[in-house]
Length: 168
Image: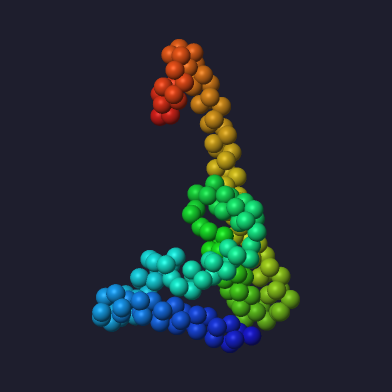
């Protein structure tokens, strides 16, 4: 199982490198070394052909409301991650934890349990951060509304009251 997982992982990396180098050869007309190709791949992760294909497959198969809810939570947490990227993170972490626990503990049941936990963990972490940020905003919104109301009563101009209250 470990060898199959590593084989698949290495093949995916090779496919990514080959597709990236073919695009670079067409555009730049010269061969880049492996380190430069890898750095470009990391910088342009969302432009990668395999990532784009995965993104379109997920967009087609997953309900819009579910994607919207998850992506809204991710934006509230302060991260610009798409639903497909979150799923890739979840499955990658689950696979990594499963392999590491199976190698270290040599216990398939524990490996499965920890991999399921690892799959759930990233979204829960993002949701925790989003909840923390929302609580902080809710604490600050009361004083903002009160300040804006007082300035509106003094000036009689609501847009001006909001502009004056925003820095505070």
